[in-house]
Length: 114
Length: 114
Image (cartoon, each protein chain N blue to C red):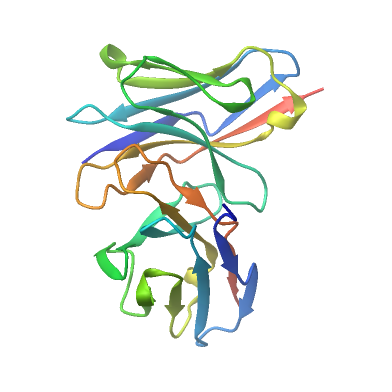
């Protein structure tokens, strides 16, 4: 179990630029989740995948956000035309099937939009 | 929709004192409840989870939580705080919609004074 890996750890970008984050889940976990966390708040659900299928997207996820999980392995989250309000920590987590299976989180990617 | 409410965004205790972090949940069905801990600049780690096998759940680092259906509560306790317990703690519930996404409370930051 090598854990969930996220890259990069930090990203500073100018408003209007596109950014892409990567998440490598625990290999045997078929469910992968993206969350966004702002200062002083709990993680907010963005989207999730079961294998390669994206099964749910939050209303928080505007058209500027897109996520993929090709071949059901790693996942990418892209933000187009970034805005200052996109500044946050983006967390990826994976888990096994089952309602009581806990999430395993990566260390997150902190995005700062200037 | 299921949700959790954490009472108190900040809790401060002295080293060696009892830690009590409060969580109330809203659920129309028996819930799956979790506590996670987050250290600075890291992702969340599982502390413990409730799965209906027992109302008193023991977790890592000496923490435990008691499920009380009559009070819809799942408070986290530790008999004696240690400096290393200083972190942010999140109560969470697994939603009953497809995908079993985890819904987090706003978090409680624990400060431990020497």
